[in-house]
Length: 77
Image (cartoon, rainbow, N blue to C red):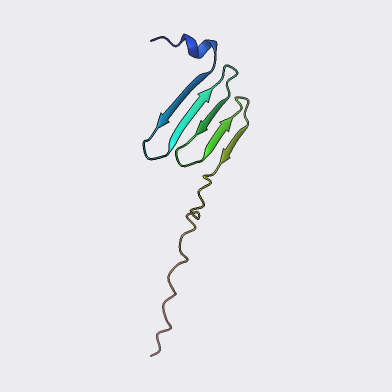
């Protein structure tokens, strides 16, 4: 096993999680790289300081937290 392929060209790796989701990533000789994650999100880094993240497309609403419980009732004495 040698890393020569990595230094001479693009590196690509994919993984199948067996439940219909898979992921892959690749990196290029110019220093840029790209990740596609099993949850559908993606991440790209240009290698020169610019990066882009795309959130998962499966619209499971963000973790916006359920609004706090109803405040304590006024204790009438």
